[in-house]
Amino acid sequence: MSRFGIRRKLKSLIKTEKPTYEIYSVTFILPDGTEQVVEVEESYNLLMASQTLPSPIGTGRRAGGTCPDGKCASCQVEILDATGLTPITDSEIESLDNYVLGTDHERRSREPGAPYTPNTRLGCYAKIIGSGARVQISTLVDFESLRGSN
Image (cartoon, rainbow, N blue to C red; front, side):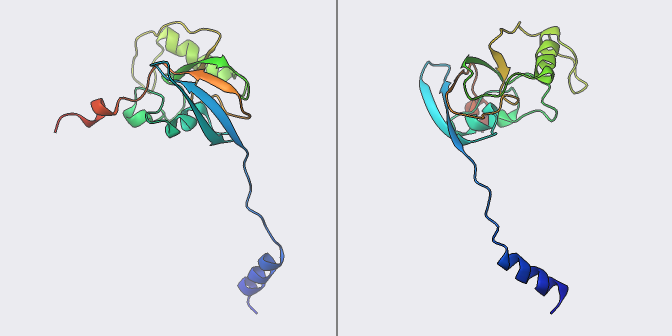
């Protein structure tokens, strides 16, 4: 028997189970005031979780995508109830501060942004670790403007 045959035989004897993930619920309050509860896997961030909405959190990027380094701070949301979310990190605060100061991002200048509140979080940083979060979204992706005129 070849080494691959032995390996296959050993793998069949050792039963490996696929990892399971907890499913948690998050309530999004949309810009029009309607509430939508979504069910997502643990460790999703709010930006990923919003992909289950008819229109995800607006980021100013094409189709609601994220920036490569998570430093653009354009996926800001207001947390009404932080139950089930990871705490804010120093890196997230730095991104928010740079946004307010208008610090260059991705070698492009940007205008200073509006000040943030103690409840402001970035959708790409805030991870879901339990149920119960309530999140106010101020901007959704506008698919009509992305289509353009044909």
